[in-house]
Length: 324
Length: 215
Image (cartoon, rainbow over all chains, first blue to last red):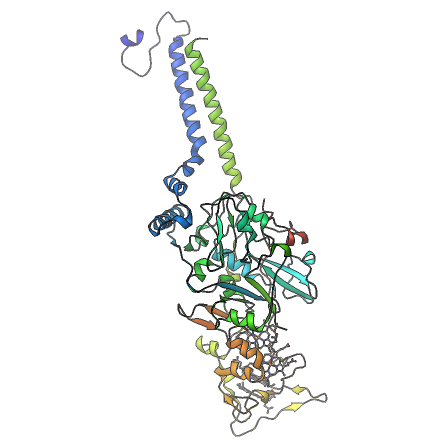
């Protein structure tokens, strides 16, 4: 073979007697190499998005057990994995916890419709606290404006934008997850990714959710949101106080909803929507404690629940009431 | 066709396929980038401060409280006289910046329903109890018993901090941090922007519709 006799070098020298000055073989080798090179380059570029997918942390996530089957040590490792993932994506180390329900605590929310002025501060405080995506924008709370004297949701309006609120002749009704004691959303989940906790909060394990959206369709309150795209949250807007079943950043393809600010309320604090409400229309607490304001309200006020489909018997833990 | 031509053809084919894939992925990546500004919460809407500063909060913030220093202008020796017009409305002189609208019928527009005529820097309830400017909530309570009881139970007004008192403290706002004692109606506010995921999309029927429309 001619190769053997040629001087060492990357390319075979052209030999006399070959009319185009280059052997077919060397041409093929050259073009083959170039093609292969282009192919590898294209492959690398083409697979770039998969790099993220195939990262070590995702493998850990893939092998993770169901929330209820994890030992505390396993959970610790999962929380560490989440912290690392957040740090990689957002460049900040979050404080991720898995707060457990407290004994003797069942959460109830009550909203005073004669106070609410429809200012929507709760909507925005919720987005900021719970790391909701800014693009596409997701919100857990929606406020419906309705003519006074009716309770007709078909007359409700979401997109009101007056100079100032309240507007004469209207009342405002904020709606979010009603934390039903008999939740239709939980029943339809085929993979047990959403369930009711002992303190009454219906939670979602974002690592377990497969994004089938049955729960979303089952919810009569329109309370669940789906991440159609990868959520976008600017680094500087990320709330670093996170919890596993709460406000840790979500991935594309999972469902999320109000969880009573689990990262705050299981640490004894009030939810963010309550603290921002300027009129004090929002009340929250432990219904098993007779001294709590929520027990007082259930005792003293005419409370009612928001029933959309009576036959479902959802039994919301979210009450509405009027003062007069 | 010999082996080598086949190999070259296969390689070229693969290169073309990968190049096409690369283009698809890259443009897909580009499409994912927002074509419009990302919706961010305006921190203005996250402000948890009360709508009004009362005597205590003004004092704590070391603001000017000379308005509360009645005896800067009034004399302790002279009783303040009130003047009324023909229909019985109070004529305010120096304090005409005070808007009087306490209740629908301006029920409590007699200054000395609340202020102590004999000691202007105090309140006096209808039962004769004197209170300092820091005790205005109790003053309100002397006439608004039901609301006061709700307030003490944290059912009227606003709280922040801990629902669980075993884990931390709770703050409760005074009546005068929400209500101007002279003009009691809660002020109207500019609403924060409306729903983004639903803007212009879901009209009335959404309310009973189990889907969200951010598709």
